[in-house]
Length: 289
Ligand SMILES: [Zn+2]
Image 1 (cartoon, rainbow, N blue to C red):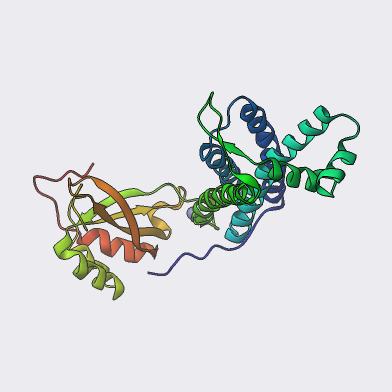
Image 2: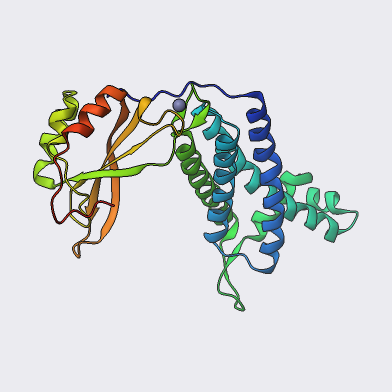
């Protein structure tokens, strides 16, 4: 099973789309969030929204613009995060300017020794951000606390944006048909006792042997494996198949809490055929849909 390597290609139209949505999209949404934030600013929620916007825009432009260069997508997500976070502060600054009258730069220079946006940020930090419940006086974080608070906000924005962009960058693309693979569908499951045998067989490229361990998808079983596949919509089973194995983790009540990809790669049509043909036929109790 070979791992998928993106071609790194990015059509010019896709680049334009990625660039425009990274800058304009984030500035626009950042402006709207600034307006919303004047009415109510919810700590944590706003940075999460900003990160989701920056990451979501990078995702949409990558997908729609057929960009197969993960570094570009991730860079766009991170840059978008800076754009949207910078815009909310920039819009605060513009508002401050318009409310402070003509001597604003002089006043900033007097108070913090610097005019313009930088002076405004220093001045705001000096005033300190207040955190508290609606309708009550909040706790002022003080100057250092405010800088730290802004850094934490920016870190949240960048983490969320980067994570979503990373998800977009790991999609599989068929270069022959010039289209993205479909989303993954389940193939079957492997019970915890057969997990190691299955993974060993996969490692040894013995796909028909691996298939022997495959049964129905087991839900809510700790350490069971879930297998899924996805295809190019045009090539179907005549093209390379993306094959993924994920491990489920459940809590004490047997509820599925998370699943982690343990193995993923491309199978040739022949390898996939060998695997499919050797899956034991299923009797009763199958919950395969
Ligand atoms: Zn194809």
